[in-house]
Amino acid sequence: MKKQLSVFLIFLLVLLGCDSQYASVKYAVAVSSDAEKISYSTYGAGETTLIFVHGWSCDSRYWHKQLSTFSKNYRVVTVDLAGHGHSSLGRLDYSMLSFAQDVKAVIEKDNINQAILIGHSMGGGVIAEVARLMPKKVVAIIGIDTLQNVAEDIPQNMIDEMSKPFEVDFQNAMQAFVLPLLPDATEEALIRWIQEDMASAPKKVALSAFRHYMGQYVNGEASAVFENISIPVVSINARVWPTDLDANKKHIQDYNLYYIEETGHFPMLEKPKKFNALLTEVLESIEVKLHL
Image (cartoon, rainbow, N blue to C red; front, side):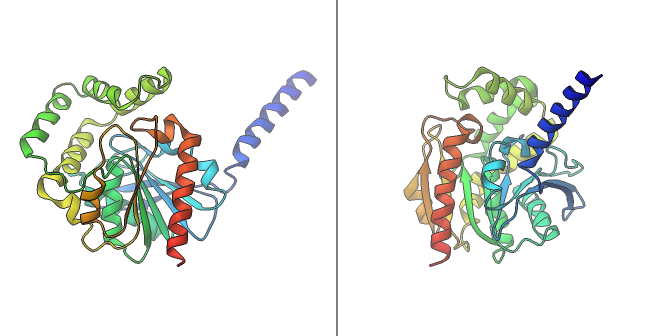
């Protein structure tokens, strides 16, 4: 009996130790402009709030390796966009603007006055829309392996061709899509987890979001969204795709580019220590600029 009690106490202490780093964690739900329920979590405290926005067919779990580092000095919020994670999925059309309304609902629900938005992949398009919607609340945006060329012109027929494999066999197409996004040296377990996780996304949501995200490069909205955005905009990009610094600077008033080397499309998961150190450097440079 004593042995069983000792084991239980050790197990309890381990649990308490795991939870202690997120002592101020709060789980909540905000209601978006179209009544979709948006799940989000907050960690830590600080004058500035970092809002992490996931990419296409992902969710807030993709930021789990950033929580303990950044919640020490900031209030950290992770969001599940509509149709992703624990959020509802009753929306008919999953556009970048509708996703931006999800983040806006979280900002309003939690009375956030000073936010830096961090968006991965498709999340880069989302946070740009949020910055346009809430210019007095958003003080900077940071894209993670995104915004490679906001002026890129993509024909509609190319997007139609890119969509076909996902329409025919979504799960296999998604697994094939993920593989070239990660270097050969990536841990096999991480590759499999991302493949299986993204392949389990709701097909209807994924196809709608994909067409809207890529459609920004057909109608020119990818660059037009930045016309009245004067806050700092930063990319932390891998080398999976080339980033056109000059093209971005023509369309974004205050743009800076940082490369994270030896990673693929998911640097926050692949090399979290390296990524966290670089993101810390970027945040410090933004704070210096904001206080000038």
